[in-house]
Length: 241
Image (cartoon, rainbow, N blue to C red):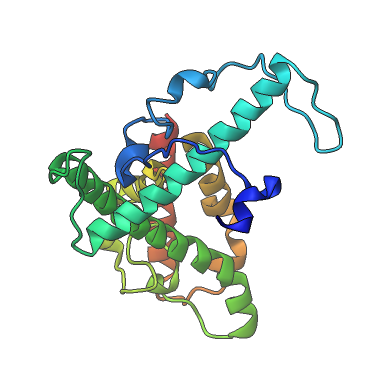
């Protein structure tokens, strides 16, 4: 007999082995909580369970248990988020997902492909907006460091492809401006509201605030630039109506 078996400190009570669920187990529940455990947690809108700071001792009883439930909910949600990223990467590289029965989960794979396609589209939309916004932020510095006169296509107009291609006055339409200003608001990670976007754009494009820009426009293009500003303002007025 091994000496270790007589050591009470090394003696352990046998426990039944619990099988871990499949990887996509965490996706069955929309909230990110496995359905078998969902009943253990309070609703997200239930504000009856208080939270405690790190310095404040948590009381025993139902409030203490409630805090543990909140911590477990957060932990499981984090696990679900990481599992979701792993599945998206796996599908994007040609991997196949299976369900709990070992069968190809085509519905889940199609849903992930749809999500990846949407994320790609949202990234493109944000890239267009960021290019436009950054071009405006850089304009004052550019004018201080450069003495050249601005042409019509040097202005960062609210259109897709700003800074990537040349624009003419015929490219600047009320409809295209409206679509561009509102498009990035459809991205799920964007918190800006329509009202906030219109207000900030009014402040940016109001003729009374563009004197510093107009005085640097080439004389041959000043009329076209003024027409362009008028088109942008018309678009904003329509959006605000």
